[in-house]
Image (tube, rainbow, N blue to C red; front, top):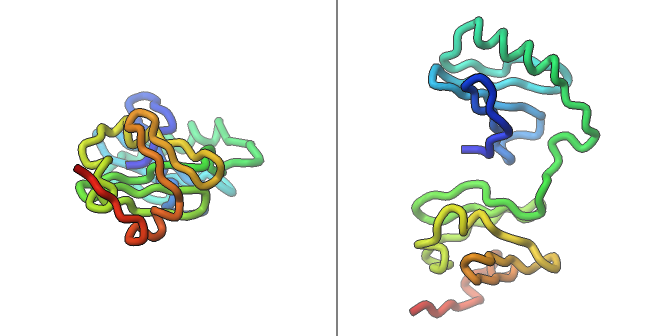
Length: 152
């Protein structure tokens, strides 16, 4: 699930950072979910269970609050965890995505969600997880087989 932008009237607004380039937002509540294009105008992109009244209310709400930032949709972080599952997690570093499997990177296998999400990019090619005391170079993500790991 994507990061929550904010909550309003029981709706959770979120986006998927790698879903598509056109600026949009998802609105989710127990009744269903809707996706809205935010540019060039606010338009419904898809509705999955919400009533027409709910969709109309959401559309009007977004139109009143049209975003005007010149960097709209730009990444706010140089490094971001985009997905976590039972096999590992995906890490977006600038414009490149990496998969870190727990088999190749065992330090993360029993880490909490907060520990995995707390990642920093230092010096352009050095990743640091302070809570886990783990440091990795970007080269080790691209070619894990050339960086043998020993874990006891």
